Image (cartoon, rainbow, N blue to C red; front, side, top):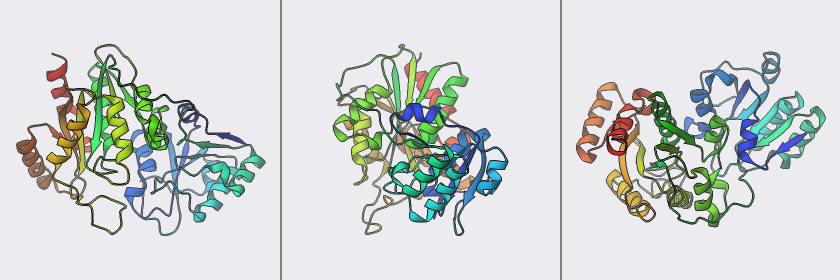
Length: 352
């Protein structure tokens, strides 16, 4: 057994493919963003999915048992769930142990460590499978300095958690690269790290070092190079605002994109349900700009990215019209429209 948890960037780049995506008993798509993100952005590496009875998530892959996945050539089982607190439920443990026993590497983006699960650790020891914990930051991170760095930076920020910050950043980087611009997606969460093969899981960094870690993610670069940085949490979410602020200050963004799920009215995962409503998007933007300009006085929004999956085509078009009227910015759904309009604005404002 090998336990890989010393450096997230190394562990992610060492994941063996093809992948069996494990959705367990995920109750909704909101909790399956790791598996769904891998399927969206690394579909060719995803062989199948494994779901427990009652799982309400379907990633569109073939349902495979561990034995069938191994026979088909799978090399790793990846936990595709990202639940509150990053906890591995007891009901998953037999599947994780059976995967390790069958020789599959087990890859986790949870806060709970695979090696701390005796049954899983024993199974991996028996077979020689690796246990890979992605959500482990590098050691000896620096304190943030606030020093201005060369190059350009874009940060995706959100009205809440799980509203499309990662997808937006990936779509923008893809569009920039297709145009011949110099751009790099910078991952700050477990799913982004698995997609990109490197990054730092910001939500696992001790708070004093958050901005320093964000500075490491986006170092000095050529003047025309863009670091497109995956956002985390939301400044208005009582549970996760700390990581959002550390990332905002450490990344020193030149450009920001606001991400929002249409129809989302309250912050997720809070009790009592409904106590914390999402304020008007303009106030979310104002708060982000106020704090961003502490480290970059020229920071400004260049677009709005919406998850419109619950809307009809006509409803989507009307929503876009209203947002453009209100904010004077390009509006996209990255999975439907791509990021062309936002990159158009970036080129017009920063590259002319």
